[in-house]
Amino acid sequence: MVNPVLVTSASGGRQGKTGRHVSELLLKRGIPVRAFVHRIDERSERLRALGAEIFEGDFLDARSVMRAVQDTAAIYFAYPVQDGLLDATTATALAARQAGVRRLVNLVMLQSSLEAPTPRMRQNFLSEQVFEWADIGAAHIRATVFYENVAALVRQSLPAQGAVRLPWGSENTVLPLVAGEDVGRVAAGLLAAPELAAGTAYPLIGATLSLREIIATFGRVLGQNVRYEEISDEEWRREALARGINAHAVEHLSNLWRALRAAAIDPSDPRFAVTETIEKIGGERPKSFETFVREREAEFIRQAG
Image (tube, rainbow, N blue to C red; front, side):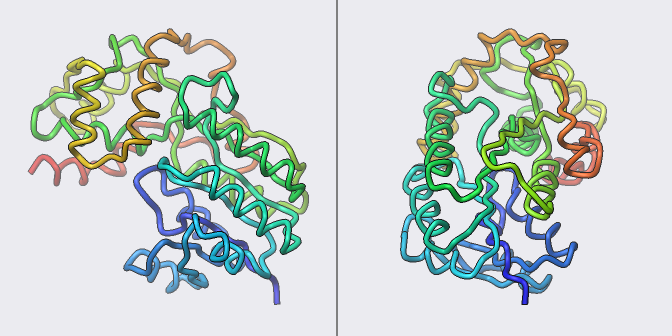
């Protein structure tokens, strides 16, 4: 019997739900999956119905992680944007090393360095170093802002107020973006590949769009006038905390908004070009932002109603 791939955050959370995409894609390839979930619910039961083995555990409990990793062939590591990343990284690295795991695909953010503009991005870099030191065959996917995150931000204000209210500066602000599904396809490709070069980093950008283009896309898809309303960092922070977004994520995003405003990204800059990795490893061309929004048009209509 082939040992399973351990997929963390498998049920899917508030971000790109990459763990869920990876689980489904691996199962379609006939690769067994052990889905690491925080709790058993309807989402985990849908994965079980697809053939996944479900492991209910706690990322921050090293013994729980060790039990989950036992007898697995590889690991997909995706920790949500909340406190505890380095604890979870260390527990997973220790468990993988002790279990003899020789392949781990680690999801981090596009800017992963000690000079990155947000605390979370700097933690991502430290997480990469821990996995490297563990000598478990780690590779790193460095993904930019998910389409799913932009959609969630838009849903927070557009239906009720007819405007996208964000502290993103002018409509000329440019954002590199990617679909969570595309990230999942690359991760699944790396986990299923015959060989994987340890220590390799894979930057992933699916589109580079100005805020004006993003707003226009929502207007076309929804058939309505969508306008942008700039708000202050402090106003966005207050509203985000009131909606229940955790303080770690709010701190990360507040710093990210400031960095994007200051970056003045040029869409023609090759550093922000669409990456060939998505098609080469994921097997399909990157999903366009407009296609993504059209696929979820009903969600916005329900929100508006």
